Length: 499
Image (cartoon, rainbow, N blue to C red):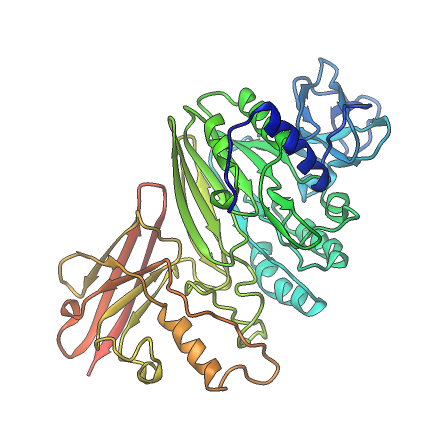
């Protein structure tokens, strides 16, 4: 068990040792990076005649932050193997790359000159973000699954949206990082990419491909701080942890964020599983509502962390690969890969405005209104053969809300009846239970499919409404609305028949 401690001189010394193991800078700064941030009129990434520097742009080495002067010039110290990047204001973007942080620069142990060409973009006060967790392709075949599903879907969306890929773009296959970069770069939207525990190697391949593990940017009234909290504890082992260097970066970023701006924290491993997250909570004192976005779990989970004058709403967004590209193939040949909570492969859509945000789940290839599954027990005869389902009463209603949490209210109406609140329960999702039974009976997997290794676990997003709500033979219609005070909304409806 890891215990979080407040920082002291001894703790700083211990942290410095840990930093070495995590491939971050620990020695005194001995190298200088200089350069310019300029308006790249012809979008070629080179300072041409007549192209002017941009004043007041923040530039960072992942810990320290400096500002460009009136000519767009900056100078910053580092010790080596650090990425240099501008912290982009909402009205700017990198001119040469749709995958924005792939244009950031990993610097070795030498003095360097690094220039960043920017172009103007609309400084949208209202914008939409797709938060995509764990594409996690481990073979060319799985890359093809991703191309047919998540990348095809994003390709058709509004170019004004923004994408964040939340880590584990690959599954230990560093040779697939370049193809993933090309996929991301071909999307019409601006994208940002984070590192996950399966994207790491000793050669810093992720850093060389995607530019930076820790960085920040602004959009509208929000300041995004992106963090690599996958801390190496061995060749394959890791834990959720933030180094002293990263904590300094967070503190330095916060010092530049005006009190009226909202902060968004992003990391691969959930912050509630990060052993020294309490240090960050302390830094956020008085910052009000803070959004945190994570992935890693191949499940949808939400946690609320309260601090001194701060409430952190964290959404762990599930996985675009679902339960690791497993399960029966659909009509397009892509594995179903239902997750243990009962949610399909998907991601989350966040809508931001000047005052706050709202968010909802989006199943890949599914209608946007498909934000939950509704099971009426006893209608499917297979349920009578499933131990965890066969004792459920006929016509009881079970609702799996993709993104619900303990604070979520779920209200239901059957036909023209009154609205009633469903009760959150601790039980398995029916579709997961049926899939497990079909696996057990060797009906699944069929030829050319891979078994989905679902576990006998309760869903964290399951609600129950008794059969009294649907008494009577005939066809019925049920409407469901789910919501909570943290910005989550979902709705769904279906018909069912009692015979």
